[in-house]
Amino acid sequence: MNKNKAEFDKQTILAVITFSLLTFLIIIQVSWIYRAALLEEQNFNHRVAMALKYAKIELGNRAPYCEEMTNFLCGRGHEEKKHVKKYWEVDSIIRSSLNAHKIELPFTFELTDTLLHYSKGRLFTPPSYTQNLNGLTDQSGFQIKVEFPTRNQFLIGQIMSQLGLSIVFILFVMYAFLASRNLYKREKALLLRTTDFINNMVHEFQTPIANVRFATNLIKKQKDISVKTNEYSEVILEETKRLQHHVEEILRVGCSEHNDCDLDDLDMHELIENVIQSFKVRLTHSNATIRFKPDAENALIKGEYGPVSLVISNLIDNALKYVAKKPIIEINTTNMDSNLIIKITDNGIGIKKEDQQQVFEKFYRVSTGNVHNVKGFGMGLTYAKKVTDDCGGSIELESNPGKGSVFTLIFPVTRL
Image (cartoon, rainbow, N blue to C red; front, side, top):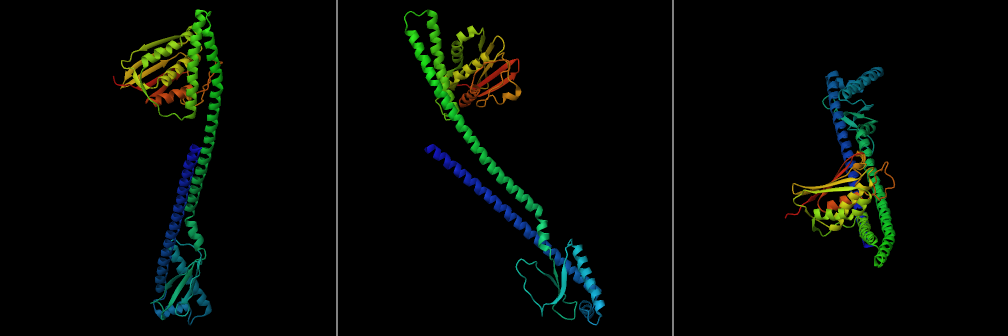
């Protein structure tokens, strides 16, 4: 219960941290977009101001004297028709100046007298851009006021690409977060189902193993049994012990809860000899051959006897099962760079290249082709990798379909 609560608290903290980081990222993106909009607005305002200054100069060139400029702009002493014509001339000057500064928006303008007319801009209303005409007219206070009705839409359009990319990025991050969360939940559910399966499987094995051991002991206690029967009974008892140990190790690997262990000094030559001896009866009945060449000068490693012997036993067992002809197994040991190298070579059916990276995964089983009735749970090589890792070593595989496989165990040696 406490373990589940601790796991829940850990995941809750992780979710809160992830959500907080995502929120912070969104705030940064919004702030960046806002700053980009401000910069775009400042740039636009600056270009308009420069364009209006340029327009003022052009107006001065059209009417070099103040009185002439006043008449030119206000239409004093001119007919209405001429005044309309001069309005379009002013419009043309302003438009040309705006175009020269890369501003091609529709606009309106008017001549105002700031001494007589003043209105404060309203919120959310596009601002008015003004340019005073001091020095051009014979009266002070005149200015040209220009407005752009579509200014806000234009500015939004200028940052639309950045805005779109930011929205897509934020949505992608949110999707990745939710997808990762859902994937984690599915993986956790699968792990729980796998653990339940292993627990149930192990408990189902316990009863028949105990019955076999009990029945074998009853046979051995009989006084009139033959020598062969007694020998076979010893083999059954020994294999029952090994099977019991296998079941316990499967439970340990499946639950992935055993990480620390007390490591002892192991003589791998002696250990391998004992494992080979345990296969004596099976080798005879399957007409198999094991050739052991202990060439390593230092075969001492740190490890647990039971798990390490089980690794060697599993590899030999696989070599005897996955073969389509007379089994021939070679086991060689050498030393290299303060390591003990154990190579177990067989003449079995081999493993395809695409399967070689997955054979060490839990419950993964390679197709056996023409070799039928081979039982297993896909845990042997997973267990082998875990044990070698716990001992500070590693396991490697080389295989060619139809020719056999070579499993290489690498263990750090203990100094003599």
